Length: 465
Ligand SMILES: *Cc1c(COP(=O)(O)O)cnc(C)c1O
Image 1 (spheres, helix red, strand yellow):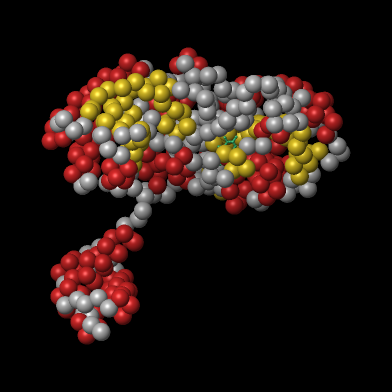
Image 2 (cartoon, rainbow, N blue to C red; image 1 turned 90 degrees about the vertical axis):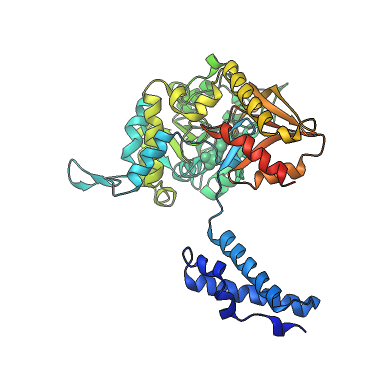
């Protein structure tokens, strides 16, 4: 038993490395960390019988305390350079915001604001009125409401209009979207009863007509954002569903998911229905995300008929789904970018999706040269070259779409696993694409200034192998 060599709490606290922690952390947290690490070491000595001198034991505890405090209390969100070429990467926080949007948020966050005050009247106002006129003028809808995310938007719509009643949905549209959004589960949580009609690949209007009962509350269409059923298929055109809803006096709701406000087909993307088109078709309510193709902060947007939106504003569930001032200010700046008429220059997501492949090639050329220069020590071992790529939209949108892009391939001649791990654990982290024996840096998803950091990050990761 070597427990006699275990240092005292006071002895550890006297170490200069521990003392310098006092500038960053409260003293009681440091003392607790020292106690915890002494316990760990005591258990280890008693368990495995390792022998340590007094100096070794103190050194171990000091190093572990510094590590414990730095990992526990520094926050775990880290900056990541997305070199995957997937624009809306759900695991990487979906839409990045522009500097202008971030500054607009910061400006409002640093003080008080009129979140719930009508400054004209000097009376209590509503947080929901801030974005409504902007959204209405962009979409052509009568009214709008913003909540925490699109899952919340669908939940609120179903709970308000269909609690205790039936909602008819095509079997081909019972989607699951990344991060466990499932139509049947949201339906159950809302208190509405799901009535599935048709088959996985084919649903006709007659299937809906036959399922209608006195208990039917609404007809739901869900955009199959992240997959396509191809081949022998039939889905009901939105216009026909709207016709049926009109005839039966039932609201028709479209969960659009991505919620694009601009037609991206001039840039070679497949035609996806925009929010405005759905409203024009006569849909009563449309729900969509703020942080997918719209390119804003996490939010769920509901647009449509005023009497339905008003009913949702009266639902007490809204209190639990409400957005805060940071989200409202971020969306305000992003929607302002759309109102300016050149959203593809103002909104990073749209900019990345509409970039000219020739520009991407120029960026990839420059990056390739910089990487070759920085990695001269590995000359002859690594093969660095510019390649053509197929990038992705991501975020459950345009599942089949491939965007012609460019990148830099670094052929390693060994399994990239350890290098990729090193890159992922640097600060900022670098997330490349992985291929057999190689990594690829797609330039489409790099943000301003990030390309300059990449050669140095690659060098550090290679040196640490
Ligand atoms: C993404 C998506 C959702 C979920 O939206 P969140 O904003 O992630 O909550 C719901 N429905 C569809 C069709 C989607 O594509």
